[in-house]
Image (cartoon, rainbow, N blue to C red; front, side):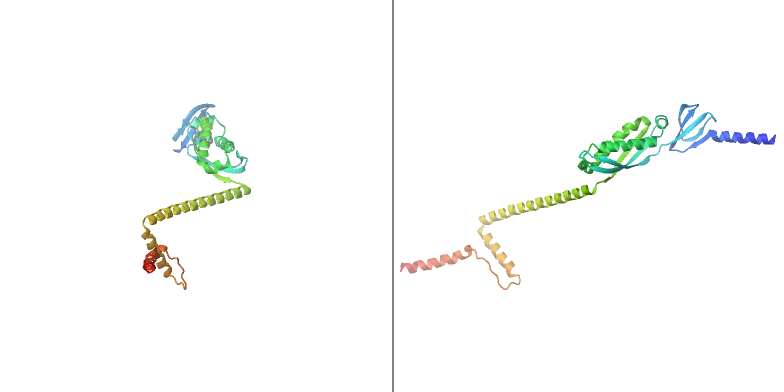
Length: 257
């Protein structure tokens, strides 16, 4: 008799433990009663009918899923390997359990196929320069496809683009040529600005001839300050003009005599 009571007590404890569930704040329990959906319950203490109710636990936290490298052929026929990362969370636990068998696996497969499809429609330069635009497009497509499953995709980021070696060398040569082009443009702009300033200086000296003489004297001072054994410099004709006029004045009286 005592053994029977102990057996019944054990059965009761087992049934009570199977009827009580405790869910955390970020968890929801999707309850099925005799195969029919009852709804999502939680968080906190959940009571189930033993042998009748079945509960599937679903986490509502954001899931970080790594999309493995995918072989992609871009629009301009460049073969590359691209991987990405996907951030999503379950917002409707009932749909995540009822509408799809395994929402984690389904979301991963959908993200891989979408990544190959979208990147196959863009050129390599666009992929490298407009990655933010491509990320937004990927997020919109995947989020639209997973919406019937009760899943919200928040972020999709392309992590790494693996280029072939010959393409890497071609891009390096292109970047070097672009830097040389910019350097030549900057040098030409500097020459143009210098020529413009020289033109302004010449026009100023043409209006004020004395400034030319002052500039010549300044140049002589700079040359004389260096340790030169021999210095050769041109003499402006303006400096000799007074002496030439004085000589002509002396020559005329002598010629009149």
